[in-house]
Amino acid sequence: MKNLFLVAYLDVKESLRSKWFYVYSVVFGGLMALFFISGVSDSVVMGFTGLSRMLLIFIQVTIIILPIFILITTVKSISGDRESNVLEYMLSFPVSLKDYYWGKMLGRFLTVFMPVFLALLLGVVFGLLKGGALPWKMVFLYSAFLFSLSFVFLGLAFFLSTLVKSTDIALGGSFVVWIVMLAFIDIGLIGLMLQNRMNDGLIVFLAMLNPIEVFRIGAISLFDPELTVIGPVAYYILDTLGSTWLIIYAIFYPIVIGALLSYFGYIAFRKKDLL
Amino acid sequence: MLVVAEKVSKQFMGSKVLDSVNITINKGDRIAMMGPNGAGKTTLVRAMLGFYHINSGKITVNGHDPVKERVKVLENISFIPQLPPPVKLSIEELLLYIGRSSGIPRERVLQEAGRMDLDIQKHISKPFFKLSGGMKQKLLIAIALSKESDLLIFDEPTANLDPKGREKFYELLTEIDESCSTLFITHRLDEIKGLVNRQIYMDLGKVVEDEKI
Image (cartoon, rainbow over the protein chains, first blue to last red):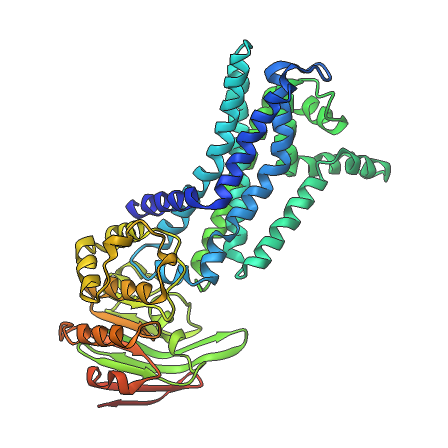
């Protein structure tokens, strides 16, 4: 267990020095600052204003950027080390595969989650400085949504990273997964499916399987319990589950999927050749 | 016996890289393992270190299975890879990793590095991959020699060293405890002839020659 924390600590230190981490932090921190400077928080669009407006835009941006950032930066973590023979050297020391794999995952989780979380806090501080009220419940739940979205994509990235030996294939695979998931949040696509008289249940089922869509519905339901800005499928889901169950589902479903994927990744890491 | 490999076979994408290999390494054996590229030398070593799941046969190191009991196996093995890997950790962090995982005192590594004319303290906060090829190799050698192991495995250890570095390295090897075994994968037997007492020649995944010298 002590080696698990050692591996996590060293992974965090290594990530803090890497360029991707700076770009990642600047993108999320910079976005918040940009929203503020550009006066997004002062505008009124579809009834949203102030901190709610800013957080809503932050969610929309997060839906697009966060998954691909996590996939690109993490999918190389084990497959890249394997290709460059770093894994061969690091694992020639008496460190169990369990400690190494979960340590890497813990370290990487901290480095991908913290900048987004801090950007959220930055937005809250900006909002408070502007004299807005602090929406404690919203900040807490939104942090939980960010946590679960980060976790599911980290799990997916580690799964791909251990399953695929080449970094290029792992990167390509993660792009495909990201695009498919993004396509299935698109209301147009769901509209097309409706137009083609596909079963309503199937459309709702697909929407509920997709962690990005689940995050989107859950997060936006915090701002707009009627979900008028998100479309009929989300409205149907909210109507069926109810607000509380929807939020619980949106937090825990991605965590469960992320845990399963990372566990399958660990099994592949243990059962397949390491090099 | 330190290492016992019995009828070990390993295939990659249907092609046999190790073909029913039998080998034992006893305490005090100083082995030069040779053979053309693709003969299976590195694969055999990697199987001993638990990196590969062999298709058939059995390998034990000090009675332990390298895959199932990798921590116990690796506690007693030092390994230097063919090429220094581009580790992004700083030297300070790398020393922390090997110190905590293998109990190698940092001072010991610095001391061993010093004996190879490498002042590592000057570069301690540099990422490992930014050192020159020779410096990286010297540091890996210093780490391997600092670890109290029963078996030292060197995969072409002098490939990046200048003649003076090689000389120092061979000098240090003469000081290794007699009970410690060494396994060199090499193409240059003439350089290590005085340091080995056994030579193994591999070809096409088989041990074709194994004799005391």
